[in-house]
Image 1 (cartoon, protein in one colour):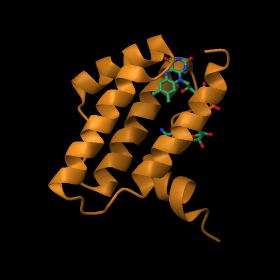
Image 2: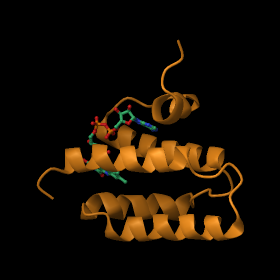
Image 3: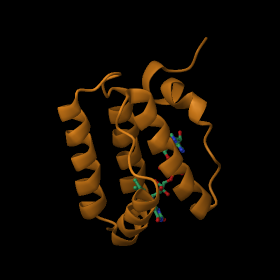
Image 4: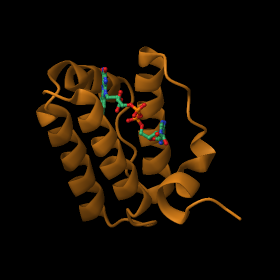
Length: 106
Ligand code: FAD
């Protein structure tokens, strides 16, 4: 795509925010739907080499959909794998709520 950086930022914003508002205790149907969403996402993300990398990582570490916390950490770890590959700073996964849900503590 013409601007894969902007696409990436927008997509991470969507994914992390979705994880932050995923149910704390998801039903089995919600867990199945989230697994399917992520699987479809990794098939159709419109940056083919990004999607290919993601599918490889998801094969090694399948999505954890059993709780909000588990999903948030899994996604944070996936993002950090990309960060590492691109030489970007590693994000502290204890800060996902502060960044993506609650805002900074005062
Ligand atoms: P981004 O990485 O887009 O991050 C946005 C914000 O998220 C950051 O400012 C930070 O506040 C927060 N953040 C950072 N790390 C984490 C974390 N681990 N957990 C939670 N929040 C975090 N680009 C490539 O060139 N090659 C690739 O192979 C590639 N693969 C990608 C795969 C996926 C699934 C996605 C969504 C994007 C991919 N990208 C890839 C794009 C790349 O990850 C960045 O989005 C893009 O380079 C813009 O980077 P950025 O510095 O603006 O911050």
